[in-house]
Amino acid sequence: MVNKPPKPSEFSRQRESANPHTQRAMKDDSLPQKLARSLLLPGCAIFLTWLALWYFRWPLGIPGEWIWWRTPWNEPDRWINLLLGLIAGLAYLAFVLAGARRIDHLSSTTKKLWIGGLLIAALVWNFLVIELAPSAARFGKAPFVLYYPASSGYFTIARHESPQVDQFLQTYPERVQQGDVLHVGTHPPGLFLVFHAISSMVDHLPLMRNLALATMPVSFHDACGIIEENGKNTPHPMTSNDAAILWLATMLVLMMAAGTTLPLYLLCVQFSSSRGAWLTAAIWPLVPASLIFIPKSDAAFPWLSTTLLMGIGWLCQVRSTRPVWQFMIVGFLWGILAMISMLQSLAFAPVLLMCFLYGLATTATCYIHRGDHDGWSHIVRNLVAGLAVLGGFLGSTILFSVLTGANLWFIWWQNSINHSRFYEVSPRTTWLWFVVSPVELAFAVGWPAFLRFLFSMRFPESSGNEQTLKSRWQRLGQSFAQPTRIADGWRLAACCLSVWLWLWCSGKNSGEAARLWIFLMPILLWVPTLTRADLWTGTAPALPKPESAWWEPTLPAIWLSTQIMICLLTVWRISGFDFGGGLLS
Image (cartoon, one colour):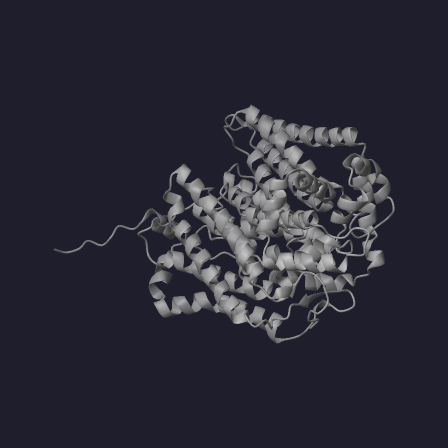
């Protein structure tokens, strides 16, 4: 009996029709050549990270302006911890690849369970990477960062200086007028209110206090003991309640950092397959910056920024058949979330600008295609969504100002004035940071993720003919006016990248790009998923089924493994905080 050759899958046929050279290239490539090509860039990324952060001792930044410190790696148990970290990485990799192999073929309920499992896996991974790090980079750093006012001051003011929320908010406009350019003067009151809420919960719920004290790791407990010993003769010595508050605040940031995988998945799946969204979301817990800066609020901000982008991507569509009332409700809730985000930090102003530009682009595209079937109804839906967003944002802002006596409009304005004075106090050489910041960003997000983003800018061929880069960009520009869902994604990506480029060129983030740009880093992971679809037709290619060739999951496994290695190399070497005793170079 002669075995018949297997029929080509739908994925293979669509991929071949998109690029007729693909099948020939696959046949011409031997296994060693394919492996060599696929391992070359990941190997270079690991080598470059090790060389720059571990072998050479050059300053990580610009001396005299801003540098990051290196963490000593000299504990007796360092090799055991390295082995445990690699085992944790392999377990995370196995789970992600198992999900990628199945998620396109699962029922809705089962898919939700897998996504929930990814959230848990991300949280466990984050916890283990931090706690297995050198002692200076473990959770023991968190009490020093949060407790002492020199690092932020949010806990000190909320716990001791102004424990009454109403009095604190009424006097906050006067506080920001004092001109502080670091923490209090440049931030709205949201982060203080978070500590007020946690303090109230610990003081009034003994169960929560006991749970916090019972779950804190040894490194965190020991650090609190040091602070308690050093502060015995101070007006406000540390108490067990204070330790519980600090641990709950740290856990909140940790959970939001890991939880960013959910809105990132929901953002990606709007414009790509479930598998592509799954693999992209799984990269986020491996981004070094999201771990290095825990427990700072910067590590929690990506959850808010990605949720805002996910929401605006759902709201603003050139073609949608959903009823208008859904746009009203979601738009109103999105406006409230935007206000809550701005209550935490002015860093979300660029995100709101991205969303505003995307709304304009979507409405303009709807107007261009108003003559199509049901064209005007799509314009109405987007206008209703915009009005709902405006109502939610303005309504919640006015309500907050009236109920608390803290004029948010004045506070935001004064925050921006104080922030503009930062570089008068701490001068920067702007042109040097213009060069250094992208390199710092690459190390902060991880070279594999950064290269993945750069490669995504090489847009896919739409025919078998060789096209110049110029013609590809021209074709991309023409596609922006198309009424397709994937074109929606590219319009949103263009708005996001344009605003980020403007921030970079403006010199507003001269130094600390690894921390200040964390809330934008999910964009670098999301944009490459758009290239997994046929940009010019608006259709996504079918994905390989579980019985397809072994090579399909191998390439993601190689790059994810590389990202895991680079995450460990970076998180265990770079300190986001200066406690003394670190390595300057």
